[in-house]
Length: 183
Figure 1 (cartoon, rainbow, N blue to C red):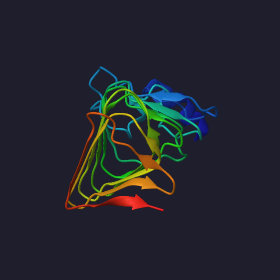
Figure 2: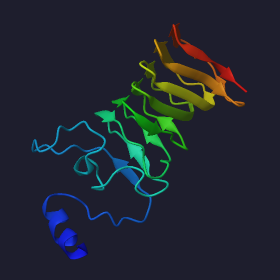
Figure 3: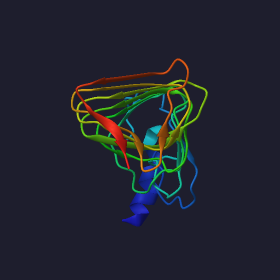
Figure 4: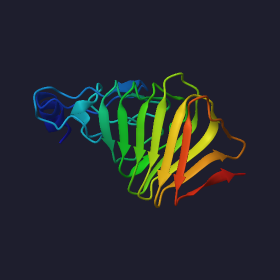
């Protein structure tokens, strides 16, 4: 079967999946219409031809795109650069072990779980926690952040020694949610 995969996968635009070194996996949807161009689970739309987290230590660069995320990476990712784009987490886990940067929009919905080690970028980050989404900060948030949590969402603003500082012009909106500080 290995021989068939080695022959067939590259011809249809898929990587063989033998990557062993961590790299920055950039979202780069194909322009030929064969993919919707916004789903995180389509290997063809990533610069490496495989999914972020295929190798431990991969970083993710959304390159300013809108990406619907509903996967849990096989290995933790290192850094996440939104690049001014929009990341809609519809389920699954995304817990970058490194920095979150680039500003943009982060929307957590439908039993999604997102953890950050803080946010210090100068670009504004808009976070929306809805429909059983869960946001956990395990670092220092000091950059401009607009965080809105509604309904069944959970927002842990600072967990076990972390801090959440509302920078000038930032907003925090909580409506009928579980929110607070832990530890």
